[in-house]
Image (cartoon, rainbow, N blue to C red; front, top):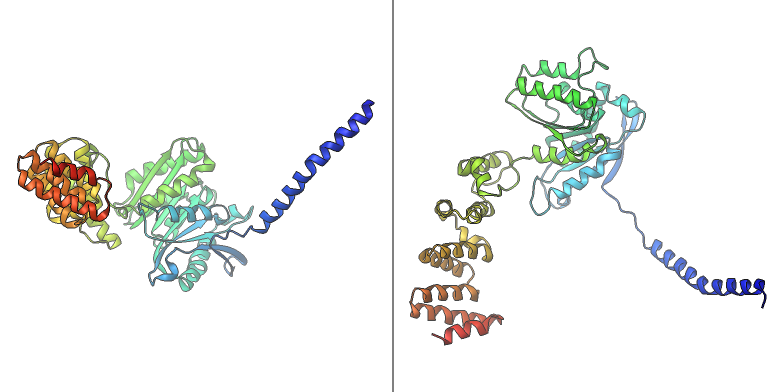
Length: 427
């Protein structure tokens, strides 16, 4: 068989080997794509603006509970919505996860187009559009409060500061990422920094969060001047924060800034939690704890009564630091709050075992008795009480609790039944 024939046969064998596979993949691919669906985030509407003499696309995302409650929601307005709207939506979800960091809020994205984007942020007319046409439309058609937050990056970040200057009460919060320009007189006889200086002569009940990359070049120069001005002249009524973000670039500051800015704006919404006894004491200890809860109540309407989880974390800080004095102080402080009855079995057991570590058996018994009332079907609690009484040579009480443990374990088919029965039989 000559070489040409061998090659022809090889090619034929290759074709009949791979063809069915290729065909199968094509069929599978068709089936896969037929199952694809649009992944829609929020809604979009077009607003015909008389002020801007153009149509403007607006994106909006409503909270999960929106259609099932009668409540009204704060609104986060995002400049450059075409790029950053989904970031705001993502954070609105993250802030309502396990540890709730904010109330639910509506997200509105104001779309821009290049090259008009830069032109928008040089005109006060754009702010007039936001106030008179966009906000009025959103408030009319959605369940909103008057609490609004404005976020922008770069030129839009400087425009968020422009909003604070030109319309100080329009937004309650202003979050500016890498704002530029703020120290130049490109668009006005006075720079935004100079206008802020004049504005600071009066009270300014508002919020401003500004952040910038440490590698932000000329942007950083302007924001450092802003930081100096804020330190020297900002009225006490202005709640402001300036932050230089490490390990970020100019193009990425929007993402870090919006997260931190929202967290900063909604400070006090999250349940009080400071990890570590030293950190807790440095922050002001119990006085700070009660002050935080009072302010939280005033701003967000929570009950001033401390959260059970907050109280437990304070006690746990003392346990982890092995500080019996502080532990005893905290337990006495929270005695009237039914802390033991409200926390989980594992957490209340942690407290009882810490008492036992320092031979405070009466205190441990008190904890387990509260646990027994709160969780009457739990065999382990009764067994632990039996162990403590046995260590105190009180066999009669130990037997009573061991028997209760066996009875409960039989009823619930507890895998530790054999262990409990053995301890009872040995008495």
